[in-house]
Length: 551
Image (cartoon, rainbow, N blue to C red; front, side, top):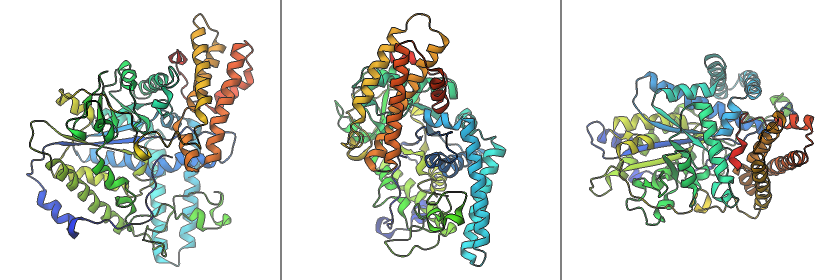
């Protein structure tokens, strides 16, 4: 789980106490805004699948994200399309998330999870019948979860990827590719072929899942270094997103800052994150999600109620039933007021659009078309920030109302074909802007083992040039899966931050141990068939993975 959690509390300060709605109405229709806004959402979760357990805590990461982010965001996009709203938005769905969303076992477990939550919230309605405020909140959640189940299982046939494909087919939503298992590509570049394999296999998975060729590519954690653009060009990628300092410290520096993309010498264009717009949402001190009116992320009945009251869910599990708002300070939490939270989300959306327009208008008069690129983790909108989908919908509507063009990087490049050529600086959007998070002393021990395994995989892939038996093909594909999963950036992130640390360590270790055992069996031509089958059942993503990319 990569997203920064919402701040405990803060009060958003608007300029000089201004009335945001009044300011919004003043700029309204008829205003000619020069420039455009590109909203880019990146949906990603690490591959977590444990059929050997009846209940597994980390599988809930997927279930929570589906319920609170992916379903509400999809409903919001469908709602806008039904209304005939003309807009553009970009979505990256990572290959590991696609693998989980397409897995029948996990989809069935998700329905079971929803049924348990629906049963729990029914009991909450009974428990809170004497308190009209709590009862109203319980009924809100009963409606929320019931509608989620009806939409996901009934209307969509439990096929969220099918929904994404249909949204893509409207031409309004552009879906882009990403690395196979969300590895930090600049780190993998230290081991020959590893970053190339992540990129190539990620693009393969895009083609299998969505069809056609991807135009854009999400660099995991926006992490870039020299040479990555060449690997992207080999897959015919046209653009990618970096953090602001990647262009600010480029050679030569970007003349137009973050307000225009730059072509790399290898070909693909780099779009830089707009810091000011991003800060309005990400900042723990001044970002919108920490407003006192919004729902508190941490205060969940899974922690407040007894084990008997939330059964069959385990004690201290997030249920998604949260009765309190952020409130403020360290005082007593106040009950969540849904209407007030929605009103606040509307107000913040108009404030956000007004700030974007003001930033574009602050640019000196020019003969070029500026763009503001604003990328976020998709899970922020709904999971970490419950009102996020409302905010995003209102941003889209407010942008249209105020003549702020919504575009995608692909569309922008089609209309603005001449851009500066430069080489972006090594960078990421992680803490301190480089690779400190994933190279921290707490997790740095991972990489020598990964590099050793990659060298071994490369040798095995190169040595298999002739006809192979079906069984040896299976071993090579599973070797690729185990290595790719060990390379996931999520494990280092969790270890460094101390969240699910033991689980993350176990995942890296287990994948590497399985890789070593399978590699030894292939090298000695003695395949343990039951063990291979067990590995294929446990780590079953990418059924057609092309192991030859490791050559």
